[in-house]
Amino acid sequence: MTSHFLCVHLIFIYDKANWQLYPQLAEFSEDMVQTAGIDEAVDRITHCILEAAAKSIPMTVGKLPKQNKPCWNEECSTAHKDQKRVWDRLRRYPTSENLLRFKRLKAVPRRIRRQSQRASWQKYVGGIQGQISSKKLWQKVNRFLVQTLLPSILNCNGQVVLDMADISNAIGTHFARTSSNESYTQHFIHYKRKEESKLLNFNSHNFNMYDIDFTFHEL
Image 1 (cartoon, one colour):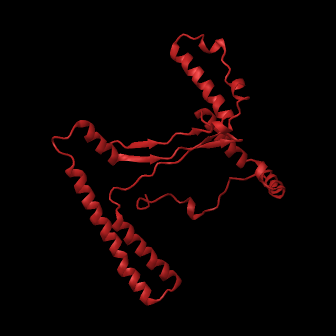
Image 2 (tube, helix red, strand yellow; image 1 turned 45 degrees about the horizontal axis):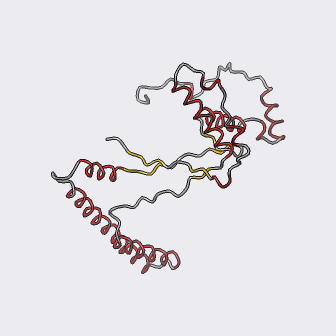
Image 3 (cartoon, one colour; image 1 turned 90 degrees about the vertical axis):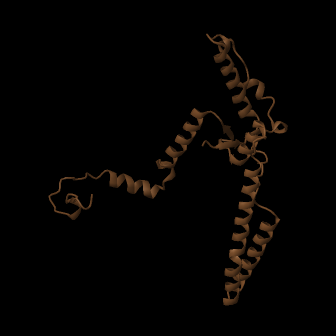
């Protein structure tokens, strides 16, 4: 069974756009359309528009859709609030009486959630009958399988990076800068150069335990 994801797209903030910069970046040339196929020309123009928009118009994720659990009802909310209230009291006053009350009440929300999940599943399966249309059937199935996938946003030097090659280069540049001498102190760089200038001798005739071959039991 394949998973279905609800992808959240980025939203342009047009009120904060730099409209003087956008037409300068979104400038088309004859080389873009002088290709063998129409699909390649469309891809070039689309890429030019998106790149210009990404550099001149700020973006936001927007408000993410809230995924409500069908089995969560008012009784589950009340039991969860009661458990949280008893837990807060136990943290403030860690007595044996409060601990016993918390352990006794801890099983109640779990039992209520299981009952609600069972009832919700029975209602869901009971709604799939022979006279149901295929459209409503797939709506029920997709509603059951839907998940929320948060988009990954990479902001490099104040600009949102969308192209996969640019994303790879930005991440590689970041890791290269992190592991370079720029992130080290001068004292550590001096010590590092001093130690790296020493010649290492790998020829050793010492008998150490880690030089012994693996036994069959160890393998």
